[in-house]
Length: 479
Image 1: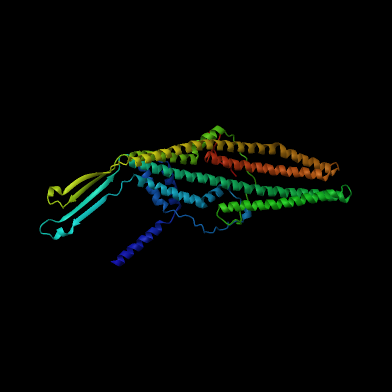
Image 2: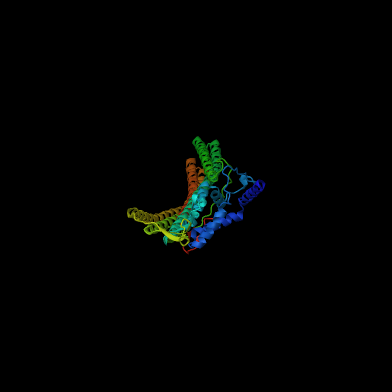
């Protein structure tokens, strides 16, 4: 018999281990089912989908935090860092999101528990001496009882549990949006340092040419030694700037590697050569409307408000008694017609101070949740307005650099070089003109990356998608 039980146990362990292996289709099914749970209002559907999620959630394997990431097969220098892939990878590897997803999945399982009846109770008792007595019949009794709460209590508990699960879901979505914003901002910082390094190298080449020209003119006594020394100072200043930019680039790469849960010095692919500048026309009022309809933190606040409303209903229901019905067979009664009995137990809610305090507490909590919701609406409107104005500022500044400042500075450098070649300007004039051109180019790149960073902030403030004035969803800038 023990061998048979051992064989059955081994077979059960093998089946469990096989069932715990994750497949992509199972994970996708789990996420799709969880998405339905967050939005369904039908009790039966919620119960059905929740059960499916419960089985699928245990099949999903979480990534190993100690797992080493293999180097890409292609050389890092030949690759280009993709922002959409980077965002997806950061999401997949972030432990905080994994913890919040697990917490949400756990809260989703409270609904079937909240609406369920309590377990029925079984009671048995006996008089042992009666079984050997010749004077009386056997003495024993059995009873089965079921507690039934007052009408509406189970549904109120279910609404409260479902609202709390929805709040946990929207908290997860809000954390994802904030993580996406952080990832995009880090990506744009990484792009900016690389682009400024390229501009600095270009400037080094130009100044070396200027230096050679100054040395040639000094050799034939057309300029003084001050021009040669000024050229050396300008070159050394660019070398110092290059060291600074290299440090900034390594720090920005380390920040991205940290988001990817990799070593900070891990080789990182190069950013794109240039960023797109989609000049979308945005409407501030439409953005605010979208924010109040799709911001996950506002949806979470609304869910907590619904949970508080359900708590008030549930506290008010506690004034009414719960019913316990039971059926009993009592052989202690020697008369047979008295042995079978049915009955009802009721709790008597007479301690009104406790009940009133519970109702007052629930109402004050509801007032708190309502005030928090309205305050969050005001904060969101301000946040969207601020992010919109900042993005609009960056767009206009970039346009000014592109259309006027940089072209004018290029013409100034060309004029200064021509004048220097014919001894009508000093080398200091030429160096100042070149320095202004480089600074304006760097500021143009800063304005471009700042625009993208502020658009990422606006995307998070709106809630994930940005509408155009025509009411269509605008994707994030493509790379």
